[in-house]
Length: 470
Image (tube, rainbow, N blue to C red; front, side):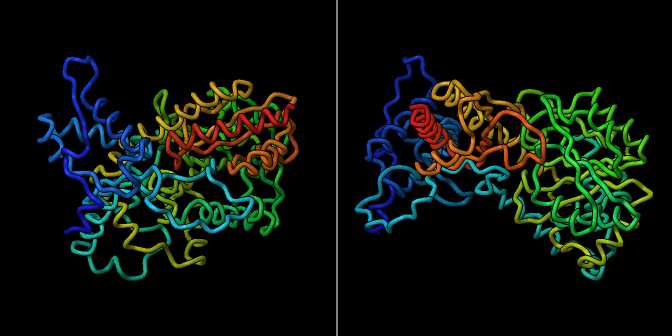
């Protein structure tokens, strides 16, 4: 017991004093007291805080007041909490720290890496409930070899969800389950190559992680069409003959542009004229902060559009759960490619996700995460405005990243290198350009960073900018 006593606190030891006549909400007073205790070193790294019920009883407030204070401090990075476990101090100096091993010069203290969800908030309890339901209730035949479509329970649940939330025109019979976007685009490119396709269009700039190597392996040429503040340039697209175009219309990667209604209609006109396929990568549209999510193009023309979505940005990339909505005339070809690839995705994961969707847990998880991601985005925007007013943020209404355009006198590559030397990882737009020109810019991912780390990183970036200008 003595050892436990040194690492955990009684409620009274938090030293929280509430002033009920101060005009400050009680949960804010609790937050401030704990935050000050952590900053001063009185509440040391790793210390377990008392349960919320105990603190509430000691302070004579409702438990909800304490829960709200704890949750805010978790979001800020001062505390860490796991369902069924202790809430612990996650910031501040360690007691008698051991000498740290020397770090390589390139080690990053703060990394604005993009394309990451905050997997520390994965809904383990709800997911476990779905796994248990599957193992106790799934019919025996589900554990045998299945068709490449995926289990019917998940296809039905996804069609319902996507039609309701993303405005698609999905039929369960046209849903194909795959192992993330990487496999999904691979299956589609294989089908296109088999049908004689020789050229596809991608946005410029755009990610090259999945599409370009796969297209090259299939013997398909890739042509870039420039993106402006409204998405892909339809006037330039009209001058290209191709068999398909890959778009991120609801939140263009990396610029964050939203394809306008006129441009969407223009893309579909181009596709009809060329007999081309539109491949819609809807990678993070559920995370929208300033207005309702923009509906999917697939809902406008389900016979022309392949819609690709995944759980990577909403739950966790390690699940390797993805899905395609495929035009009817291509479904069996895509299913055949899936069967050839791996005989189908793991059945327990599919059934668990189907139950997770049907019980509304996916919606609840997104509702919990949006405010946290928005606070981090707002912290990033506030820090950029305060410390680096010369940059121009864009693509801020949705997603888990934003772009900050640089003034002409700042060299993108030099700034990325200067920030890295100071232990801050930021990433340039230029490596993702195929041939278009445009201003230098930095890509900031914010999903996995605390608000404090975000601010500290931008302060260091501002110092790097100052050094480059001297």
